[in-house]
Image (cartoon, rainbow, N blue to C red; front, side):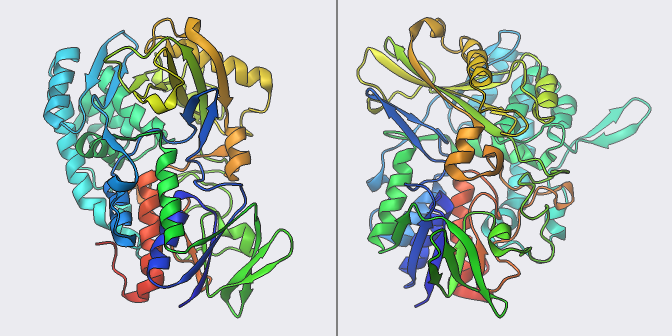
Length: 509
């Protein structure tokens, strides 16, 4: 039995902790904040309850596997898991409005054909077929196996793009999300639909590799799920599973240093000077500053301790989230979509501003309206959350009250397309910016890491779960296979496998 210290109580860290405890190790989690869950937070006031992080779960199989492997009670016995149908509503700049069904490729094709016409649904269906090929080619090495020493196979683009003949330039294949939209989808609304998936994960459609096609494929194939009471309930269930497996949590305990001896991690030092010995250290935060040196394995990409955006070319943090929580008078109308995406009237201008560190004049916004009595004080009220992907704290000063309130007004105005009369129903609102996220989680600039992607010469991969420092492992959004709830759970499984099985570990089964 090894003594294992876990730095941080985010979802990936807790997933690793539970699995390691089941394997017989003594696990202690040190968390700088007062609670668990990382970015999977909750805000409650006057009977209204809001998620302050992810609002939906994709690939629930990841957490089903965690609960199967760590106890007798399955995930559904610990939380109420509901499929969201329709999966999403999309409002485009020209006023076109379409509802996309949950986990039904045929239904999505039919809905797009009916709303957009001109064979749009067929083109989207063909695209999803190529995205399925991309998923099948990259799924296991990208998500379910430890990152190999030779990154070469993952550096090659797995998306089977269609040849496109451009005037005076010969035939080319789409290499980015934006090029898929322009050359293969051939409809600005379909292009906006695809770009929206990239933007939601903080990816620049102009630079994100074509392999990002797996993002809409995963959602439209495996579905979108909501946890009754809000996504914070998933974090609660994972925390309780850790406690049941005798994982110890110490909150309000910031780790300031990873202790090293003879080239191996031997413990951690806390802010109060306490040194905790350990046989292994698992970190859910960037280990470079804590170790006082670079700890990347050979082949890892991205400047250690600086750029958290795969594919980034400078030291800027990745994009972040701006969120407006609205307590509304009046009940939720029957049949209202749980999630509506109101697309920007000028997607290229939005991307240009966002990835240059500026506030987009009119961002794409996502409006969440859960049909859940637990989120509101009564049937004559409604809890609505509006989010947009924005430049991180530092690029924009989100601590400026005037800036944050004006931008909240921009989001609310855009959301009127999803909730007519929205502004007149507001009782109160709470604004959460990247500055708030940075303070809560310690993430640089409040950034939210994107999932890892194959292709682009490996520029969108994350550092391996192992490190050059023996006994030190990475977990969570800044490690393989990147950000997102499902990916965090996968990273926990990979780290636990590497520690329990060592060099013989070949990946999750």
